Amino acid sequence: MAAIATARKSRLHNALEGLALTAVLQSFPTFATAAMLLKLFGNHDLSGDPGVAIFVAIASLAHAMIAVTLGPNFPSVFKTVYEPKFFEAQLSLSDKITAWRTHPVASLQLVTIVLLLSVMAVVTASVG
Image (spheres, rainbow, N blue to C red):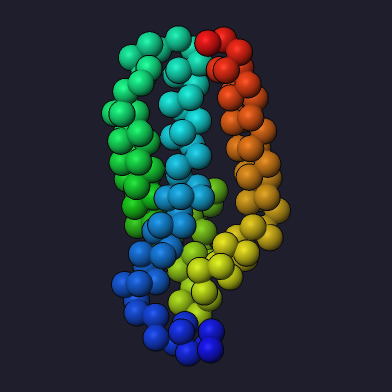
């Protein structure tokens, strides 16, 4: 059944999956961390502003689009942002995520992001 579903996946559908995975798993944590650091260091313009969420979403999407566009042509420059497994048409969405998570670099990135966000959340909550 999974083989039939992946055989029908169009090129556009596969490209959108890859772009979405790049934006959500690699770009979003970077910009969310940047916004939280700005808040943590006293930028009061971010307090309760919905523009922060819009900025993070648009910046993540733009970052992912640049990485997806230039990543295949310059793999040495975009090695930490562009993941070729996200664009393999024969893999399902969950298989793409699983293949990415099993790389040691991705695992290190995930652990770093979780620890950094956890520390910043505790500090932000305790500061006010």
